[in-house]
Length: 314
Image (cartoon, rainbow, N blue to C red; front, side, top):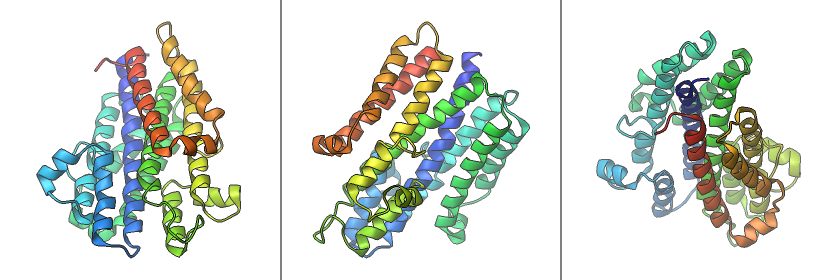
């Protein structure tokens, strides 16, 4: 297929997934902000979202000090912020429009309708309707897009690039959410299993990644930090885990591989093998933040190599 078409499909999927994961990150931060805490701690938690997305300078210029309202406004509906949910869904729609003939009617109508619905709402209208309800709307629109994509689109190279873009974005964002929340939620003096507040906050983190029920089914025990990390990093059968995402990416790269992509496939295979054979005790002993930072660097490098091998050069 044409590299330009593959590029639009790949980034369409990444932007949709990015909007969903940003909604998940903002939602878990909002849920945690409802727990009693000092104003300084609450603002620090909101500021972590800005830092995580490397948006400190534009945010400071536009809003100054971080607060719940400022961060939500900036990350949800700010048109000047190219990383906001608004901008992500706009970019997804633009990429979809560029390859309209490759998409099925259901795909186009779903993506276009999501953009039209969001464009019609101001930030004040979103807040009036309930910010949690809005985040659920974003997640459901993303799920609906995936459903119509893989329920109606021919499973050829177009579908492979869409799937690959979504999985790479999901892996990167799962790592980011876990990294920014894990240390904030380190157990307090009540012991490893924590207290009611710890349970609520760990539960909110798991729910943000649709992993709460999965955790209960897999571990059938209290929520502990090590098991949360294991579930979201190493469990192959957890759909949003790093291991699951890289396993599928590795498979898809094998399907679309060409003569110049051997090094990309090799690096994807190495990254997947570290997850496949890794143990959570070793990950935590070496430092979770360091592990996740290295993983995000590897994902960034893999994305660049995929662009160079298959897509339109930047």
